[in-house]
Length: 219
Image (cartoon, rainbow, N blue to C red):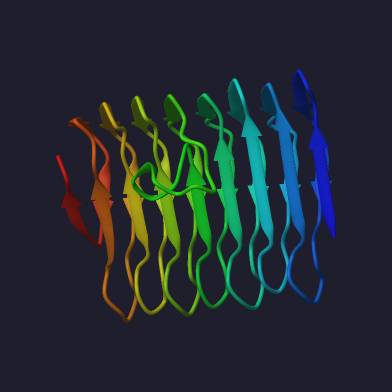
């Protein structure tokens, strides 16, 4: 099924939005507004045997403090996109596109290198300490995570794209500035570790950690 919430002004989500599929693919959820707030009490889920799709979009500020998931219980994880002019993923947030056989895809503030037309690029993106972003792959490969902004990106939370047989891919970039002090784990189990890309103009890496990943930079 499909669930769509649209507002011309502020959109506040405090409860549950569900498009779960028990035996098949999870459904589609879309939330659109000028300023969007997903409260710590909120659960937005498009889970299924194969993960569905969750797209959250704000023309102004986007604040995610609750649980957003498109997980696959017996297959691949789904697709999660979080876009807005200014994005904050709060310490209480969990964003999960993991799958039993392969990780899905999480895109916050834009897609790969800010060039994916499906996702509008943000002006700033903050992943707060305590926030958790997951695209784990169960028995297969980890999924893909892109954290982007056309301005400044601050990644202080955690990113996991762990696979049982191959780590996933993560890009953490800001077109102007990037600060990374969180934990990134792309370990691959019995397979190769995943790949991590930093692609800003200026980068600051603080106290955090990178587990089992091949690091690429394009500075």
